[in-house]
Each structure stands twice: as structure tokens, then as C-alpha cells.
Image (cartoon, rainbow over all chains, first blue to last red; front, side, top):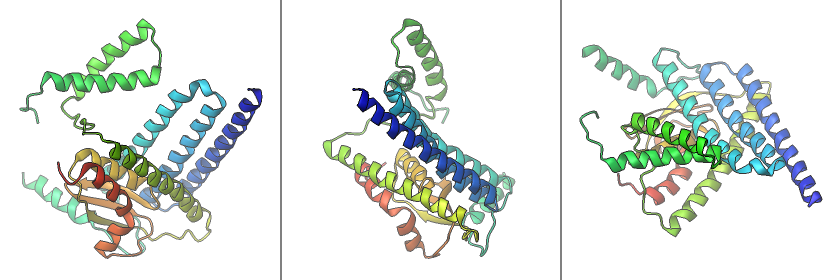
Amino acid sequence: MDTLNNILEYIGLFFVLLGSIFLFLGALGIYRMPDLYNRLQAGTKASTLGAMSMVLGIGLMQPGWLIKLIVIILFIGISNPLSSHALARASYKSGIRPFFKKKVDDYEEEVESEKGKMESV
Amino acid sequence: MSAKTISPSRYFYTFFIVFLIWYAFTTSLQPAEIITGIVLSLVVAYITVVNFDCCDPILITPSHIIYFIQYFLVFLVALVKANFDVAKRVINPKLPINPGIVSFETKLKNNFAKMVLANSITLTPGTLTIDVVDDKFYIHWIDVTTENKDEIYKEIAEPFEKVLLKIYGSSK
């Protein structure tokens, strides 16, 4: 029994370490990327997997908490992408334009036409 | 939306789901916790019932469960890949990005399925869902390799949509 707990603890520690590495890379991404949208990209993906693996690691070290922590993992998985989508959408609509090397922007049309509709009302 | 009357069973269903989430977080049977949960769930259900159109009980068959597992695996692989992709770009001193916003049309009609697809796209390599307008998805892509609509669809959505279509079909 003790050895099993020890093994679980080491696996848990590994997940926590992995999570902190991903979170660090996410932070580095937020620092290095040129504009809001690319920062969101780096931030969302890294923080989702980073936080998930960290919470899972803690769950393996404390098996009693595991069920609750799995619920938290699901919650992170749903809420993280939703919030980054809301941020990106709101930023675009309030006029922050993305950084382009070569302009490819299908969304501009949609936002402009919506603006036109709002003004004509 | 306001003129629509809401049946009592709708209220009860919303309340039930909200309370289930509360219970999952507390996992305790103490009367105080349960009563607080019921009161809060009632309030939340009353406020959100109008917008609560997800999670309708679809006919669940064994094949659905297999598809859910398949979806989860596809998603997990994509999530891990996405993280290595971000790591690769961030560490590279040249910062190899070529961002742009592309769009594609989905065949999915169910709102919940669209939400799942949008979230999955956000968590996969180099893509971020900015907006969904009816059937059209607008995606911020960190490295635009093609402007051809079919290829965009193939690159970004196909692996997920294929499985979701099997679960939800293209019906409402």
C-alpha cells in the first residue's frame, strides 16, 4: 500500500512539473507574441493543459480529492476556451486590429456589415 | 425570446443540471450544504432558464458512448500537439508566425455541438475561434498556410466535425 502511494506521488509530481513547464511556456508566449490575438493563442492553450496537468498531479498525490479535481479539470476545459473566444470577439468589435504579415481577414466584412445594420436602425 | 413560454419541466431540468454541478463540486451530504445548494440552484435556474438550451437529453446509445470516447481521444491528442506547437514557436528566436483570420462553414446545426466544435478548435494547434455567426466560423490562425476554403476546412475542422456529425447528425 505504501509503495503504491509512493508511486502515485511520484507520478503526481511529474504531472505538476509538466504543468508548470507548460504554464511557463505560455507566459513566455504572452511576452513574445506581437498582438492580442496571438497572445491569446499562446495563453489559452498553454494555460489549459498546464492547469489541467497540475490539478491532475495534485489529485494523484491526494487521491481523496481526485473526483472533485476531475470536475475542476472539466470546468477549466470548458471555461478557458470560452473566455478567450469572448475576449477575442470583444476586442475585434471594439476596433483592435490583428497583426498581419500578409493580410488575410475574412472577419472584417462581417463586422463592417453588422456595423452598417446597427447604424441604419 | 421573451414571449416564449417556458414549461415547468424546463425549469426543473435546468435546476437539476445546476444542482448536479453544485453537488459535484461539494460532494458532501451535510444538510446545510444541500440546502444552500438547492436555494442557489433555484435562483440560478430561474435566471438562466431562458438561455439554457444545451444538454438536451439526446437518445444515448452504446455507439454514442464509443463516439464520445473517440472524440475525447482525438481532442486530447490535438491539445497536447497544440502545446508543443506553441512551445516550438515561442522558443524559436525568429518567432515563426503568419497570422490571419479565415472562415469556414459548418454542417452542424445543433447549438451545443457548435459550441463543442468552437471550443475544440480554440484548443487545437494554432487556431482560435473568434466568432460564430449562424453556420460560419471565424478563426484566427497563427500560421496561415492556405486560403483555399476546402483546405482550410480540412486542416481546422474536419477531424472533430466528422465525429460530432456522427453523434448529432446534421439535424437541429
